[in-house]
Image 1 (cartoon, one colour):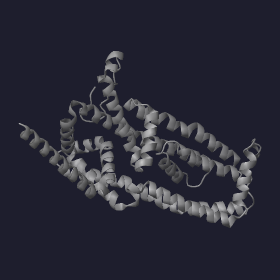
Image 2 (image 1 turned 45 degrees about the vertical axis):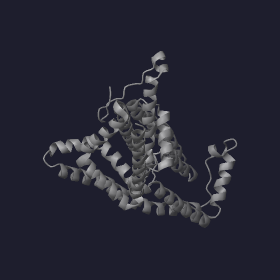
Image 3 (image 1 turned 180 degrees about the horizontal axis):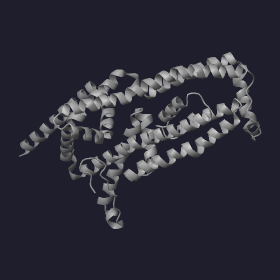
Image 4 (image 1 turned 90 degrees about the horizontal axis):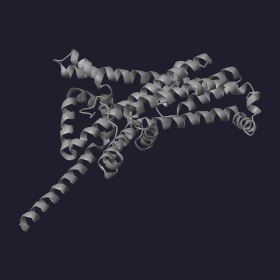
Length: 372
């Protein structure tokens, strides 16, 4: 009897070592594809309803429908990115030249109502004088700032845009997810159910609900802020309002990022003597553009997932810092699973039985077998 127990334990230990070694080797082989696969899963999940309608229109051709959807998706990503990149490259040079020409015309002076502000007025004017006393040095400094900013932007979105091969791998993975997604999901669900039991349904429901809410919350908010900010740029007479609106939409993917876009443009209008336009744009940004973020994002994310928006915001910012751009979506999903586990423990604990605390039901947002 003792020998049988020892043999059984030895087999399990050997099996654990073998599985651990295989997992380490698999990570060494596949780690460079983790980010593209993560992007592919997020994109496929967010666009699955549209693909399902396309698949219904072509029921006998699953491969063709998956290929067509992937081509449409590639066009929707690549063409706008190329357009924005080309416009941004040309407009930056024009903007630097315009700023230098404005400075050469004379010293920039803040409006009277800004210069008379207590404590900050004189400091701001002194900073402006220090920056503009040498136009050529300022031009060199601006060029250096643009280069550094471009490097930081490239580093931020490098998971998708810097390496075309990674984008290609992500799109290839999306194609196979479209074609075989149902079968893959059922297999994953079966494996997880084997280890976690019935509770896997609530976890998958939390992942699905949070992924869809964050994806659409970020996208809808960014597009809304970019459009509204573009209207403000057009009213203020700023050159290339469409381009600046698109850039603002990209910056809006990060919570509280848009004030850096419309705020800097509004300040520039003020220092160049366009006081009415500058004040109007700053007011438009503070009262309209920012409130699009304050209203739409919490409404879409928190109402769909029943998770406090503060926790979602921490997940977005923390995920961005930890994983790069893909962390905008991974961070909140991780916290959503944590909340699902926490609520289940509360429900099953003695505290939950005594206090009657029940976790809110996870809504069915397209995931598999989301509990009611």
